[in-house]
Amino acid sequence: MEIKQIDTNFFISDATNIGIVETKNGFAIIDAGIDKDKGKKIKKIIEEKGIKPTYLILTHHHADHTGGARFLKEYFNLKVISSKIEKVFIENPILEPIYLSLGANPKKTFLSKWIKAEEVSVDFDEFSLEIPKDIQLLDLSGHSIGMLGVKAKNFIYASDSFFSKEILDKYIIPYFHNFDKFLEKLEFLKNLDFDYILPSHGNLLTKMESIDVINYNIKRLNEIRENVLDILKEPKTVCEILKDLNLPMHDEVVYTLIESSIIALLQSLESQNLVKTEVKESTLLYQKTN
Image 1 (cartoon, one colour):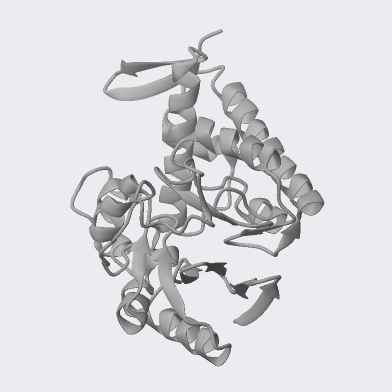
Image 2 (cartoon, one colour):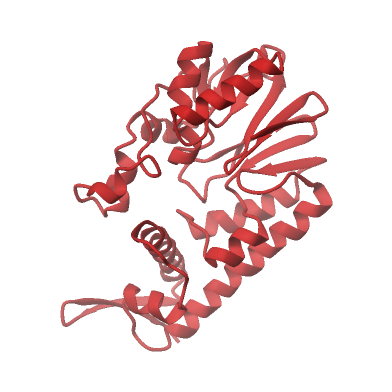
């Protein structure tokens, strides 16, 4: 982990990057790492830099963004900010293992720190008058149900709204809760005014560099969409679609996340009447409409 400066703002480069932006009311830490140990490392780094934080902005509820939040909140006496809908999941982290288990009681696989974070109370949502006026909270829902980004002057912390080319090449399909919103927010980011943008997973990018990476995300999503439509010339189950896509799914968690993304894509296609569903011989089948 290494802290780097961008004008009056900072970020800690890590597997999940941490933003640190200056406000008139003190610094705001953006996201908190995977667990308490990561939170302690963040604490050490910012103390060595002489930074005194006031806020902790949690962009969304996924464990690699919230696992260290409770420690940081208690140690620095921070005010925690999230979106109104993400607050529900952040304060009740068992909900993510439940929805990844399709509503069933989760098994151990989905109760590790990689899925279930430690709970932390949220003080303000994005509509609160307590939010510092010199930062802008961005609606970047799509990857997660109510994900936020943060804009501070010429710098944007983009959370998981897009992924590096390396990550996309490795996993092929990124995780998204809502396929259409994910695409919509990619176009939204391209049209914002900024000099630097930091995704949660990847390197700091200039505006020009980010356009190239964001376009790569758009291209990949459209390829996935067309591949699935091609597969659905014949009726298929979700399991058969995943098999036909021949993706690198090496464990149960990765499989479940990619499966969830495919279901989100199928729901998008069905809402546009491009795909129809049918239950036949006790099996749910998807097929292209024409």
